[in-house]
Image 1 (tube, one colour):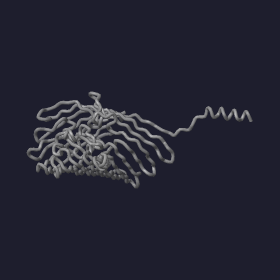
Image 2 (spheres, rainbow, N blue to C red):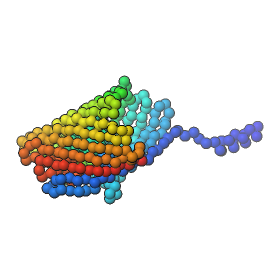
Image 3 (cartoon, helix red, strand yellow):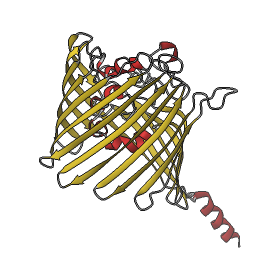
Image 4 (cartoon, rainbow, N blue to C red):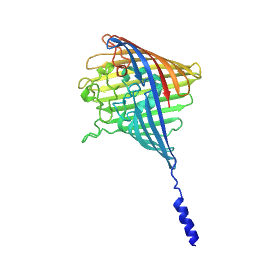
Length: 377
């Protein structure tokens, strides 16, 4: 009996408790290149810039198996400028994403933190900038299809995929005492993925999102990420009371060719003056062609039209986008891209993406060329 008790005690002392399976992944992207722009504020400009095809970043993401098909998940993602080492997204440590939540194979995923909205999650894959980055955005990324801003204080639910269909619900708390809805953000999205076809659409409404006015640049939910609300086409917006963006499109893959199209509508209430609205609608078509497993050519065209009630202005832009990409390996590629933005209205300056390039043109044309390299780890 004494021997049995002694054996049990020894076994218990050296027993290893059973822990749930967990994993953490370190990942990142470094994108660097040289730009030439024919007109930025009236002058030609040569400049090195970081994070164009993809934002330069590093991050941590992980999961812990809680049993029963449920996992705890998290993601922390930092954006940075590879040329000077500075933090991106308004100098935030994890400005791209920072969230924690639960996911279940049967019930879906619930996450809390700083996150992308449903337009980015569902509609961005149907845009050319969703394939190749910021400079191919609709002018100034006016509709946020290139995630020029993220959303703080957000709760996001993404459903499981049923028959290829997946839904998303989104809410961000404004945190204004005595006014539950002030500075909040709501959204919803839906996508279908089946074989070669993808269809996606997203909606979000940001209350008191801020704008180019320094005193109103950002809110408790929508934060100024250095791109959002900075010059160019954003001069027609000011500091609106609400921003609403609706975007949808589709892609289709057949053999070496992928084609896509997207339509977006964005509206700003109380833009430049009380009771006035600024509206922009963008329409785009694009295609990628894989010459070889390593080489891809792509091109697209975007047409954007606007109506600014406060100034009775009707901006109108056409933009041609071109890219050639060559993969040196699975993780490293080199590329060359070109953009031509043309303003079709007298007195309206061309604007590829003032928040990225540093300024709009002083004429009705702006041309950009870029060569770069991207490495993923």
